[in-house]
Length: 173
Image 1: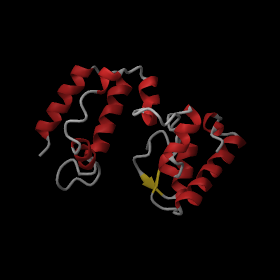
Image 2: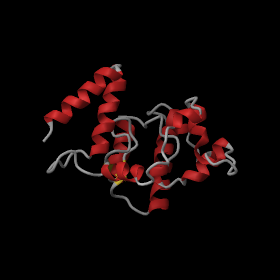
Image 3: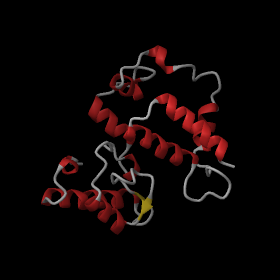
């Protein structure tokens, strides 16, 4: 699917046609017009809306330029990574090796993930839980992503961010 429209001016015909092609692609692949992850700059795939609201968000806010593989919108993960990166399936880490290449990681940076195979699943499962009992607006994962976005947006140091997280942990019930 052509994604060049994402970089076009939001007032251009190319952008308009791209938004419609994107929405059609989603509906054809996932067969729903409600509860769609919004890929606009403000929602960054964290909020769900219907097709009409998504269209409005893409025009008013613009599309998130970092959202290159439309995995939330019906594009298969393996097809996009293999096609764009020429990943070979021989290597143990080959499926995700492009990540370490992009951020210049070596084997020492991966840490020890093999000691408890359920640890990662527990962390991911915890992400769907509300921040505190009764909280309806944020899950633990969405709150952490919002906080991290603020850290990046305002250039907060790691030390300051860590202390802020500790303070919030003490403040929340």
